[in-house]
Length: 230
Image (cartoon, rainbow, N blue to C red; front, top):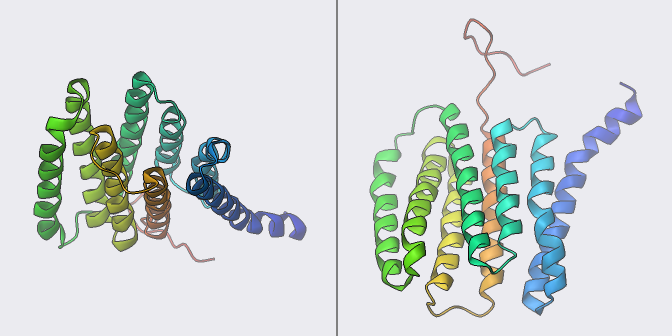
């Protein structure tokens, strides 16, 4: 490989991350300013750019798949139709399954798992119990099942990967809880879509960053850890 080509490839992750940051800024500013076309144009670009950034750094396929499932959910939720909402929820759920499958390769839960489990279980039960009476009847079971899967993903990120991914999982919980309160017609903060997208984009980035930073070392056929140094 020639030096100019190596140089271009070395810059690619930075360029993709910059493009992701620009798309995020356009989306969030569009939501703040009420510019719907900016949101509609920028939102579908977010997860493909983040997935490409992860992929060029050798991300596991399950991480790329999880981010692309997020893209599917993002695109479907641009519609206000009930079938699109359920399909979007299913796409995000598939992403959480990808994350869970990926995180299993990061070793056993850490010592703090025993302390975090009651907190996550309590948060799940309390949130679903509070939302349940105000959710549309046909969404109660899907929301409860999705919330359980999301909580499992967030807990696994925190207990197997560490602080960065754990924070990403927690922000994902917050983002989707904000969506659920809107579906339940609870009082909302000004510009609720801005806060939903801010926490969601930060969540996906932190999950991807945490997964990349703490990737298990590759092993040889006999199970020995392969050196990653030149």
